[in-house]
Structures are given as C-alpha cells and as structure tokens.
Length: 367
Image 1 (cartoon, rainbow, N blue to C red):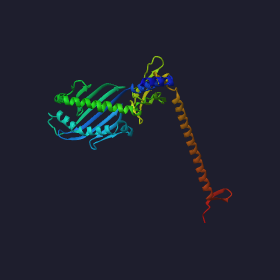
Image 2 (image 1 turned 180 degrees about the vertical axis):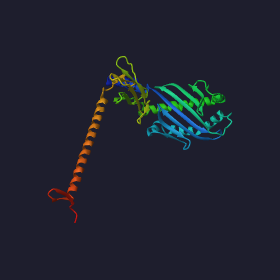
Image 3 (image 1 turned 90 degrees about the vertical axis):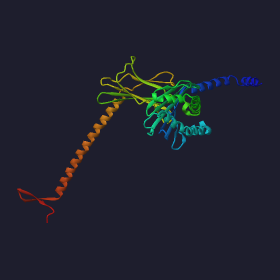
Image 4 (image 1 turned 90 degrees about the horizontal axis):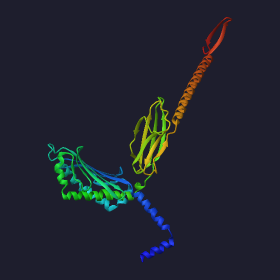
C-alpha cells in the first residue's frame, strides 16, 4: 500500500523528486566527503601522590572548540552553537568524565616514575589522542604518551599494539594492555573523539567548504630587489597548496618565505607566501599557483607588472615636492623677518643733517 502511494505521488509530480533527491544526495556527499581530524590534548602536572593541575584542549581541524581546567572543573565551549549541537546530556557526560579521570592522570604519572629517585618533584604528563574521518569512514586513531617532554608510549589504531618509546614505560605498558583499560580506551575514542566530532561537523558552518580568496602584490625596493606576495584567505578545508611559477619552464630563483596556514576568526584559514627576487630580474611573468579542493583545477594568479614601481616613483616625487615647498617657505619667512626687522629699526630712529656733508643717526626717542 505504501509503495502504491509512492507510485501515485511520483506520477502526479513528474520527474521533480528524482532530480531533487539526486541534488540532495550530491550536497550531502560533498559535505561528508572531506577529511577531518579531532585532537584531544591532555596536560597534567603531578607529583607521585597529588595531581596539581590538568588542562584538556579539544580541536577539530586545528580549530579550538572546547577546553577543561582542573581549577574550575568546568568543560568550557568556545561557541554557543556547539552546546546546542552536542546537547546538554553529552556536555554533562564529558564534564563528569573529565572530573572522574583526574585520578587516572595521577596514577599514570605514579606508574611512570616508580623508579624515580625524587618521586616528590613535579612531573608533566602529556597525552595526545586524535582520530580521523573521511566522510563517515573512520580512517585511524592515535594515542601518544609523553613525560617531562620525552616520548613514552604510542598506539596506532584501535586494535594496534602499544609501542614502548622509553624503557621506563615498560611496566606501564602492561597496565594499558589489560582488558579493562583496553575497553575504556576504545569507548573513549568512539564516544568522545569520533561521535562528538561528527556532531560538531554536522551542526556547524565548519562543514561549509569555501574556496580561497587570493590577492597577489608586488613591491620594488631601491636596491633592485623585488618582493612578490600571494595571500589566500577565507578557505575551508585547511588543506591548500601555493607555489610560484614563471613562464613555461617554471624555474624560480629567489628566497621564499611562508606564514604557515593560520586560522581566521570565522573558522576559515589563511596562508601567505612571499618570494624575494634578486636584482637584475625584472619580475615579469610570475604567477602564484593555488590548488584547493574547492577549485576545479590549479588556478594561476599573475603578478601585476611594475605596479609597485610606479607607486615608488609617486612617493619619491611627493617627497621632493614636499622638500621644495618646505625650503621655499623657509626662504620666504627669512626674508619677511629681515624686512620687518629693518622696518622696525628705521621707525625707531630719525635722520638729521648737521652739516651739508656730515649725516649722523640720532635716537628719535631721546629727550
């Protein structure tokens, strides 16, 4: 009966539902079919007996979305929409888990420093956990333990084997391989790493892929060097490739520098690369090549030729004109001041003739 209803509905609507369904599926596929990474970083400071401090930082695609601090025992979200995306029950569960696990960090440090000659000194435990998604497919997960800046243990995948990176961690490895702790680890990765990342991605603008906005500029310097800059901003996802090309051979001679890919305030990313060209190179024919998942193909952005050079001449001419105007004003002011001084002097004295051939000055104010 349900099938017959669907058939009648399709006949009445024509082909519209078919292409609409295809369009929706394509949009969903575009949103999902992207690589994403969730990192959870734990930093604990403790003696063998007391946990002094604990900070947990969570990042999705290098965007900081939440953190936990032992001092407040609060799981703090970076944006209100994230709380709505996860829901009240999950947030309370995360916070209770963080408070409950405080004891675990102190036990881990105690196990790692059991042979330490100074057990009462402070130690810093670092745990890095990450998981990767390609659409709805979990690619991998990794856990690494570090103590006081040195790597201790590493695990790749849910079913992998712990790799000891420091001999003092052998006994702790056996503890981690116990069935109870193995099950705790798997549940933690599934619930707090994978499922939370999926909820954030599905309910936020972070999944809206954006192509980069690209700006190319050129600056000429008096010593003959030229600096070319290529800036890409406002793009998502994070993965992008920028490089310089010249003509058809693609040979580039110069000093390159990069800002590195940095996050913007709107969860998009920013990258700038610069190329310093040596004197003698006119700087013509250069292009910035940009490759990003939201661009159909690698796109060339050519550098404007001599644009900065014209600006340099304009600045230089402005400086010369300003100098001429300043000097002219100074000369005019000096002459005016001299004339004023002579005029004041002539008004304060009287010219008299005592004899026909003997002129003298006499103070006109004298009584």
